[in-house]
Length: 62
Image (tube, rainbow, N blue to C red; front, side):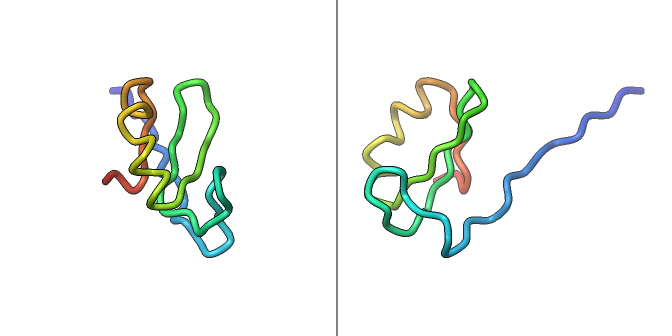
């Protein structure tokens, strides 16, 4: 039997800021290449479709 660990990113805190405008982050995008982006609500909605298209994992998933 093989078991796999599933990594869950830590919850966002007040210290986490949007990579576009420095507002409080509400969305973390884990990119398939291993990178990570954080977005406020506005920029998260703006980029949501494209992030899904490229296979990013979104947390929390809207």
